[in-house]
Image 1 (cartoon, one colour):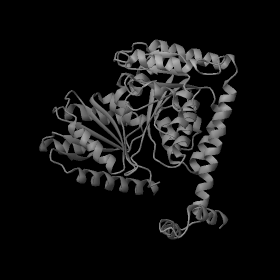
Image 2: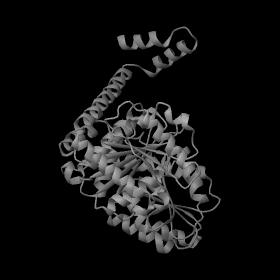
Image 3: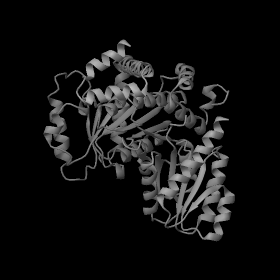
Image 4: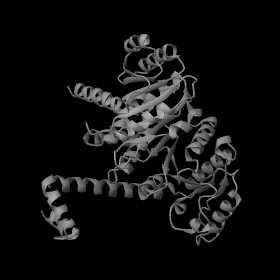
Length: 308
Length: 139
C-alpha cells in the first residue's frame, strides 16, 4: 500500500487487486484500509449466486455478467472456491468459465476459502466493500452452496440466486431446510436436460407451501447458461428484486442483518484469537492429550482456558 | 506475512489444446499449499496479463507446446510491465528447445521446465524463489 489515499488507489485494477490481497491477510493494515473506505461504500447492489457443485454457477455468472455489461452496468465478480483442508492449497477454476469477459473491464477475483474460522466471510465481506468503494454498481459473488460458511456469504447479498440443475435430487431435496430458503430467485440451469421441468415444478410446489404470501415470491427461471438462453430473464428478475427492495424499503433491514452477522463474526474471531494468544502450544497439546485419554472433558478445559 | 498462500496463475497461451501438463502442474502446486488460478487453454497475452493483475498473483506459469513461445511470451511480459504488474515470478513449461532457454531467461523467466520435469522440483523452485522474494520485500 503506498501513501496515497486508499480511494485513489482503487482507480486502477492493480490497486483494487492489491487492496483485496491486503484484506485477505487481515491485521492492522486491513483495519485501517476498511476504516478509510467504509464511508464510500453502500451503493453497490450485491448478488449472491450459490448452489451445489456442477449446477453451472460459473457459467451462469459469466452469462449474467455479460448481459449486465451489455446493459451498461459496471460489474465485478468474486468467485469463491474451497481450500484443501489438508494442504491449504486450492484450485481456483471459476475464471476458466468466464473467458467471455476478458477485456470488458469486468473485474474478476478468485478467492480461496482458506479454512480459518469465520475468516472467509470476513475476507469476502471486505473485498465486497473494496469493489463497492471502487464504484462497481453490481457485484456478483459466487460460492459453492455446500456449507454454512458459503450460505453465510450468500447472505451478504441484496439478491440471492440459488442455482439448481436437473437430476441432482428429487422433490424431497427441495423441501429440506437449507439454501432454498435464502433464495430470492431460483434458477434451474441446464434446462435442456431431462428432468428440468420436474425440478422447476418441485420448486414451484415448494414455494406454494410458503405461509407468507404477501412477501416477494422467488421466481423459478429455467436457463441454459452455456448458450445464454433464459439469462435475460434472470437479469430482469435481479433488477425487479432490486426495485422491490427499494419500493418496500427493505435495503436497510437487509443491511442491518448483514452487519449484525458481520459484527458478531468479527467479535468471534477477535475473541478467539485473544484467548488463544494466552495459551502456549505445549499447554494446548497437553490439554488435547488429556481429553483424548478421557482424563478430562472438552467443556472443563474450555472453562479453564476462559478463566485463566 | 509468510503464512499467506502463494498465488499462482497457470495459463496456456496460444492455440495448442494440450493441457494435461498444465493440469498436473496446477494440482502439484495446490498439493503444496498454493492457490492456483487455472485459466486453461487458448489464452491471449492480454487475457493472461489481465488475469495476473486482477488476481494479484505472485507467480505466472505459462505452458506452451506449439512452439510459439518466442512470439507470445515477450508480449505477455510487455503487457505485465505496462500494467505495473512486473513483480511476478515467471515460470515456463512445455516444449522449449534448449537454445531458446537463454532468451526466455533474458525475458525474465526464472525457470523453464520441459517434459519429464519432476513436479517436486518445480514446487521446490517456486517455494525457494518466493521465500527469497518475501525476504527481500521485508527489507
